Image (cartoon, rainbow, N blue to C red; front, side, top):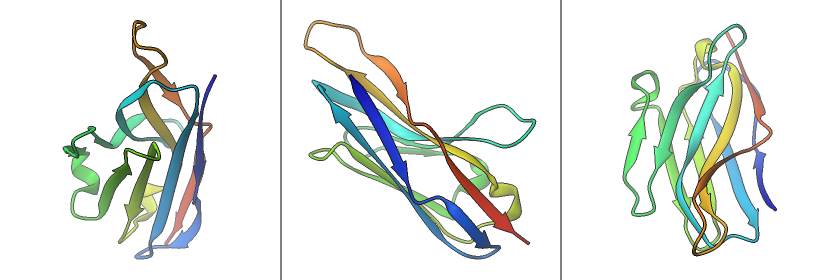
Amino acid sequence: QVQLVESGGGLVQAGGSLRLSCAASGSIFSVYLMGWYRQAPGKQRELVAVITVDGSTTYADSVKGRFTISRDNDKNTVVLQMNSLKPEDTAVYYCYADIKLRAYVRRRDYWGQGTQVTVSS
């Protein structure tokens, strides 16, 4: 069984910073893409940032220059540093990981339970 455990959400004023962390645990053979998505009330879940095993990153246009994603492949963790936060960044943030449990099985997507980020104006 695989778990993605997130931490670091909370309430912050506009212009402030938050750091989200996510750790994948369980019987894992290999972790591929990791990242963060978010879902605001009444909106669809959207990509925030993802990072490959070799460190290549992709960001949503709305967060470029403000958010930074990083990972530790040895610990199967991913971190999202969020700076210059805006009220429109308010959402539930979900950790994502593309994981293979054993050598000869297919990779599949796993999600964390979500952590609330609220940015007040």
